[in-house]
Image 1 (cartoon, rainbow over the protein chains, first blue to last red):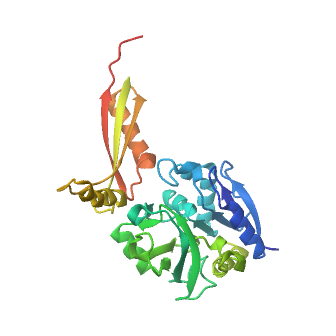
Image 2 (cartoon, rainbow over the protein chains, first blue to last red):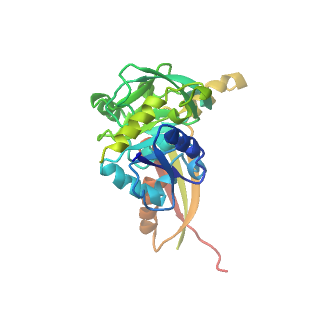
Length: 224
Length: 88
């Protein structure tokens, strides 16, 4: 059976259909998880997609972390279930405390909508295990608050534990240490600002998101 | 009792402030020289109904820690004042 991926829908999410389309294209089965339901049902992996959950009021993710589904996602993550937060989803996961650090407004206050180059820094995560270290990936970004920030202690921890999984080749937003994506201590929760689900077909200009999402699907196929 | 509350949310010292930096950079071009250290935060006002000021403050501190500020990058300064109102 193909792995089941739950894609969370908050009021204001706007990338959930892209994620569903990409997962389905790659042979997975995808379904929407409504933010107001305190369950992740029986899915094998969770994607927290991009958008503006709850309108990004106060701070991106500040209100979303109180949505009923987040408790269920926390338990799922604690049990080792694969969880990936993309863009706004990354912001939500940091606010919920599932990933360390925070995402600030971009350096120079520029909204960025472009395709950038990423370098795979670690393959020890549910999103990168089918990639290889040093691999360059062209993936779109689309954000205003993607400037990753954390304390020096957290940064040292991330680096020491090989938990910086993706770095920008040419830092577009001021993120500390060029960080584009990180993973949790258990390596099953990953957050990244770029949108791999928008780079899965030649028609989209890049297929470099495929190894990332395939990693997730293969992680989802292994019982947690 | 009604308490009026002012929460001043600021970025922690040492956390880069892209808004403050952008404002600061633009000041000389507008003719404002000698302005330094611009930091942008949020100012949030509301009212709390509590039996006394200590209770009100404890509730507001909890609200700040869990919601109004992100402790990773922000800190909040709370000002509380008992509201004296003419009875209606």
